[in-house]
Length: 415
Image (tube, rainbow, N blue to C red; front, side):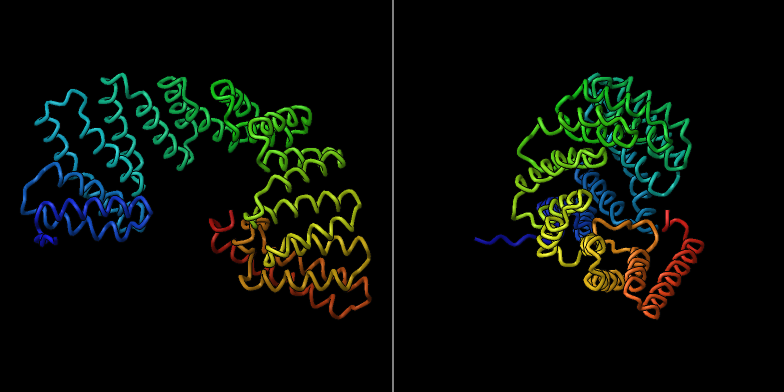
């Protein structure tokens, strides 16, 4: 049986609201916006305050997450209008903890932040925190609001203010790891690695099974040359789940850097073996990792085998092609080196800059093709092909000059 509902019936509006919520969950914000607008239009004749507020709040989210100045400004106007609606509902429900107002203020603060009105955003977060103080079960919400303030202060490079907010968040919810993670990341950004390490160690004490923390610590110790500590962290990372590849790959990387190549190869092999073959991108990546260790160890036949296996599934990886070219260079097989570099250059020049789709390329540095042209020029010189070498040197120089001009014109894109 089919029931025809009018476009402005409350049930129709409810259905559109729920569908919009579902679309937002799948990041279909433009569609969610359309559904929310239709629902609001219908609710205008109903006078239903709670449902109207819910739809308006959801529309704020849909507009905010789409981005763009106009949508963010409309989201802010809606969020400002939601506050008196929320106050009215709290008064009607005799709410001790102002649940509706807290939620409305949260989105208002977020909307101010989206419009770069950071002072107003943080003032609003503080109003929200003051209301949350009356509810002892909301320590997490208080800490989250303080971290949101800290992110905004960090955004405008006010690191001292951000630091104070991190301290307040930790004090508000000392058993949570989120504030420590945020503070540690801030310390790392400012080169204060020892303080960051101390925070990561605190996180491990609070959550010893948090694998990401062990990984970060292993990387940091490795960067500082503290190989023994790095390996301890990598060991802990592996022990938490010995069936996954990433722990072995991490330990192999540390072992390779410290010159323990046989052990590195053994761990890299475990990473390859543990990887789900259906995950072709990951499997290809682990073959590349092991191939590079073989290359470092002078085992060129094994390196070529791994790079070939990787390219069977990652045929557009300019990085893997260059790794195989490096191997051919070691074998003095310059023509095959040139062939692989040519294929890599072709991939890179489709974008005329570092390939954003190539995980292994440096997408924030100079175009990867510069290195490829320079290396191919050396291979041409090794074969005595001076004119081809000169052409590649010129191509590399032109790319470098073009990139430097772009940096001057658009510095934010290059940082």
